[in-house]
Length: 290
Image (cartoon, rainbow, N blue to C red):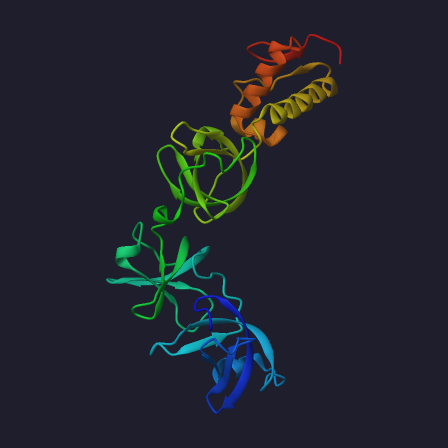
């Protein structure tokens, strides 16, 4: 059977004035045969005369306004139970609408909105199949779909894919590898982030309660030592003295080493304990030959 809200490998089995009828390719005889329509309006836009009975393609299956099944060849940015960054196109009292590359915008009911939605802004949305009403709808209430417990799931320093989806007083909440929720503290950030932004990050800490703290750069011992080597090389290149101290503005630190102020301070601490540098109010300097 066709999987609604997902891309399906389909084959054209019939044609009509309103479009092409398709069914899932290689459905076994025991499965119920189900068809969807590729509307002639989309077919005309494709200007692809090679599509006909027997043609195979990868199509996104969705509901029409009357709950009939349709299929699209468009590059739909989201599938069932996935997160995607979508742009809001407008709102009414009952909900908001998002562009998802189909003729009718994706509807997010008011009760499924984490916060009021403003047209023109990007939001992280999850696609849901309302099987009872035969509709595909979205939600921006993401917390219920994310696992907060990272115990045994991640290792410290592990690289992860992040989607920034909410801002709090402490920092930014992020979707981790599409399955978990983590937090990026303001103190661990060296660049501005925006809701809906995709970025790479690292597992900084798994707390006692299992919650995940994140970092935008590697803060493990290995990562800090790598930064330490960069600092030593920079000192050698500047005659053994640098005005970039642990009190320097975070912007200057990021411009020089592409890291946060917190990571830079940790690296300076490592070098200081190793008796390789001396830290003064106005500068740092080498105390050993490299």
